[in-house]
Length: 145
Length: 152
Image (tube, rainbow over all chains, first blue to last red; front, top):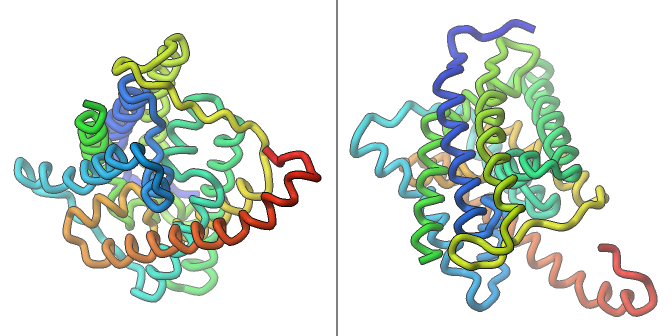
């Protein structure tokens, strides 16, 4: 294993992580809710009266973030290497998988591990492992990307 | 009031994702590609996030309700079941294919990245598909629950 020292951005990563953690912490303290993105979206698709507006507000906040960021600074470049068919398959798997598994990188990865939930620790280990395995197959065996 | 704070929380969460670099799928791929030139950034994002969030959850646990007087909805499930394992594995495959997970997908939509939008639409379709299958499954499961103890 070699560390990619050119792309490794430890300070920005930690800073961004602290902000994400602050959002998750305050969301529980103020609203009493887990800041799990897939769960928040999932609740919109399984609507319960009186439990919908805050979900839209959170989603809207996420979508608004780059707009706000972009008015004060230049948005960092994003590079999406995957082809359209691959993106569609990936999106479907992420949608089904996160709902079936009860969480994603935010709900299990950040909030769950912070709560010391054994379920979330297992889930995070599993999706990071299968993500790594997928990239290995894609890049090093099939030569995609 | 809770709607206002939801918006703020989503906003701060999104800004954190942008600053951390995690809205760039190429950077996520750099983390997941352990056999290539490995970019450990994502691990530090997780570390920073968990550090702060665990302090928040530690104090939240001592409260009987949220600062707005709302119930603290901490998940109570503890069992590691087939759904958790299979779902997480599937999610990881999708995450590895595109380098995008649900939070960054929404930020990419707001950034006007077309490929992010396509991914987000597919992700929403997947979630809708899940709801449809779940609601169809519910009927036979509900009748079985009278003879078998509930799984949860």
